[in-house]
Image (tube, rainbow, N blue to C red; front, side):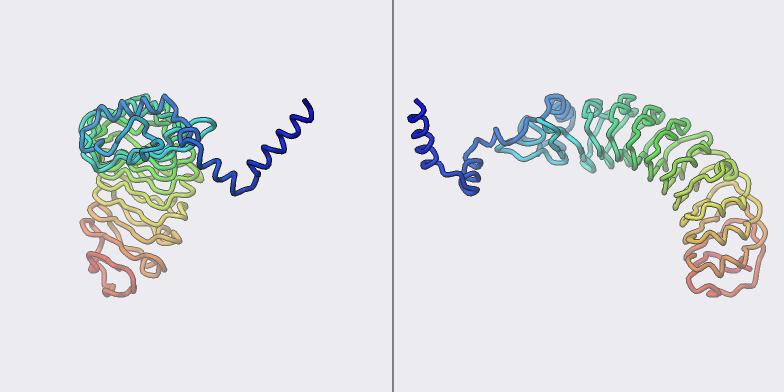
Length: 341
């Protein structure tokens, strides 16, 4: 038996020499289904439920039953999958600007491995379901330019990995949920063009990575002094948009502590008082919009000497007339130069 086994082994080695080239041929000869991992049933079910709920213009290219594709069909358009262990899971869903009509598809919240969800520029209506808080791996949530309504669900605060939150250009109402303070990785927060009311929590200033805060065109109240009252607040903030709200009070000198600020947009509020010279010493300030408030006094001369300031809008205030000529600052562009001193 031992001799026979040895001869058999020799014969097999002779017929199937083990070389890198033969291994490649062997792998290509395998059925494709054995090479592809199976898509997790949970994700297949969720995407097919979404497919059944969307209009034909959205899903006409979603062919087959497996959203991650198979041996014969590619992945569905807008669906990105990755392999985790023995299975493929859906990690990104991008279905935007395709006129989706109807409520937010709740089945999306069963895609527990999503890192990106982009449904912007559609016609989604109704509220964001509280189940959104299940998407714990989500980094980017983009729902802007829809017709979503109701309050922003506090469950969004459970999305600890979130870096980008875009909810602008909808019909959200109520207050900005305080749970957003729990999003320690958040960099971009867009809540503009809604019907939000109340005050912005100063606790948002504790978010260490927040670079862009846009709450413009809402019904918010409060003062900048309240917003920046916490020591060391907004350490990474570059762009602050609070325009077209109902903010009152003045521009506090402490605003100069936001040393990374590049854009400050205060237009169309009810703010008053003088502009402190310290604001002109924010190192990278590039765009300053003060127009259509109730500011008074004079524009500090330091603004003309700022090395980065490109635009400053001041019309619609009560600034005192001055004599500075147009072009005193080579880059500065103002809409009403006669009010500059």
